[in-house]
Length: 337
Image 1 (cartoon, one colour):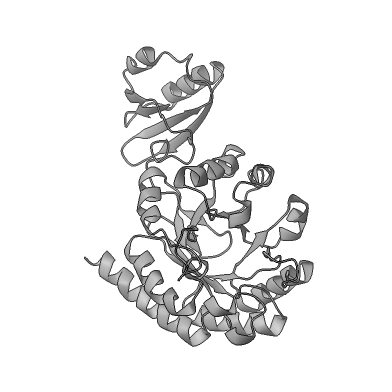
Image 2: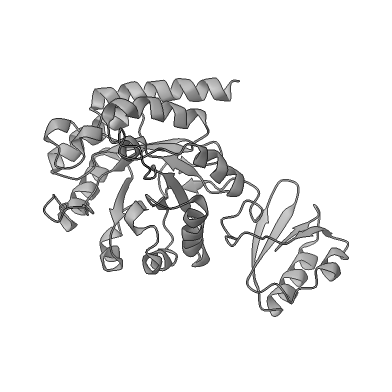
């Protein structure tokens, strides 16, 4: 349920309302907008007398939310959420667009530093790199683990780029102290115990859509994190599995528009994992920028043929620079339309 309060409501009136609502056994979430304040109620709202609330002179309206996701719901929070990376200029949502780029997996400090400097020069604001790599085959490269995070942290100091890397297990969380954005991969989208734990920290979480999950399920996973108190969630569309075999997955760009309609959370698109082929990354990146994505996550490697993970979908630094320039042109055209 949401309660819209009229502009100019006195602080003491609002406080009395909040106290009464919470005495009814529900939790409240306040979102202050330019023209009105929204009070969202989470919990069993069946005991709340909506007619009584509507009769208050400072209440503009009362609406029950039928969707099971509450905190992630745009009705609950009409304005776009802007997720900011602490201590940096990087931000997602509310008109802020961010390029995330780097290698699929961390291989060496020299490799990551080379790539980081090149993508930063091309306009990337966040460095990605896999320290823990979930692989379909147990015989494939699984990442450098703790050493990988150490390398990312060192390159962060050298370049000033904030870092994002994927978490695989709750037990690894202490290793992520210096990580700026924690990524939850497609395979862990419904690892609910992990999501609950991430809800207890105050750090941005990039949540990838599962390869066979629908939009409602993605938003419910975001709800798990937000219900724990961490509202710094970035959604990521990375393609879903279909009958198509010419691409690794099928990139669902309609999800960007649907998610923006349903939720206030920023949405990032990963064209690298979606297509699985470097030659398709640019057109899909441009399409994602055109349909309103709040950022892109692109894999970049200085020597893709020799990459230990996902070389075929990785761009060279020169190719990434070309994509970044083209994306800026698309965004400029949209913003100036």
